[in-house]
Image: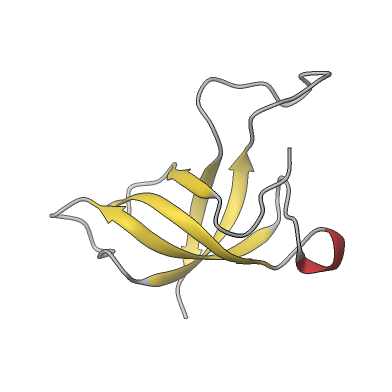
Length: 88
């Protein structure tokens, strides 16, 4: 399953961010979609109060888990997830 603009992502690291919204997929077909292993630019929409990343910060992320469709080859519990790769 592809990740597109405005997709909400759950965070799979300990940076303090909980949810992200994709601003721009940098991988995939012509920069419109991103899949597993692709880098995206995202805004932090929800953050832990004691985390290092605060709400509103723009970060780059790597897609590490997606929800499957059809053939279920990427089926996992939960939805999309990302791993923090650093911010600009």
